[in-house]
Picture 1 (cartoon, rainbow, N blue to C red):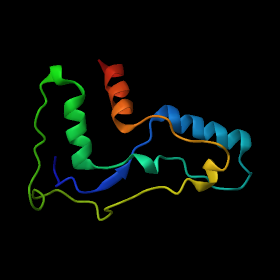
Picture 2: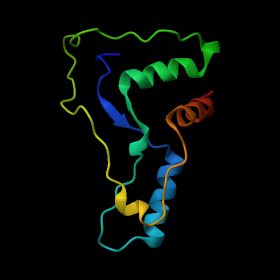
Picture 3: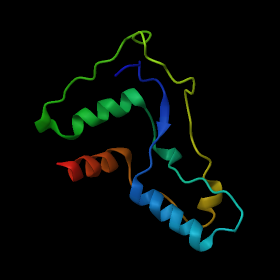
Picture 4: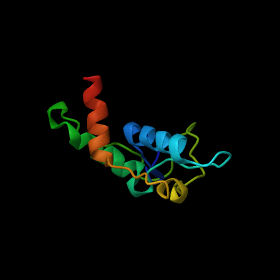
Length: 113
């Protein structure tokens, strides 16, 4: 990693997001904006990296390397520490996510193997 991994981001599995887009298209109000995302799946980049190395033990990815302090020269860190969508409006249409971060990434990685 090129940072300390402290930034927190929400991750939404593509199938869940697609279902949200369809729900909006079928039941949403014209001219309204709806956020699609998974604020329950907020995870720091460091925690995500540590989760990913455990998903496939046969790959022997045991260690996440990152700078303990600061960032390497030339790396431009994000000024945004936490970014999470407000999905209240799309939830009112009956949409919700179903896929956790570990399950979603495991499915995605398996699709490339």
